[in-house]
Length: 69
Image (cartoon, rainbow, N blue to C red):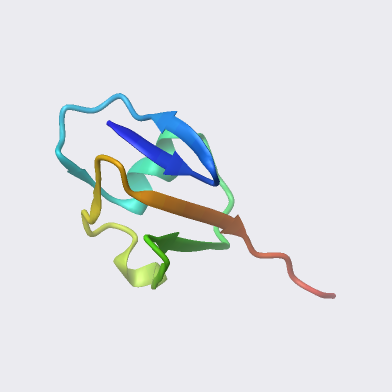
């Protein structure tokens, strides 16, 4: 599956036609817990990260949240 991830073409090795944010986080080995995800210019709530919504050609932004101490 080809998607645009953080403004770069990314090929996700999967046989699924639709994947979720958690699939991308696992594929990219992102192990932090605080992310903002945007799919096709729409913010995805954390509780929806496991719902398949990403298809071939979609534009995905995954942004690490930084905390202020």
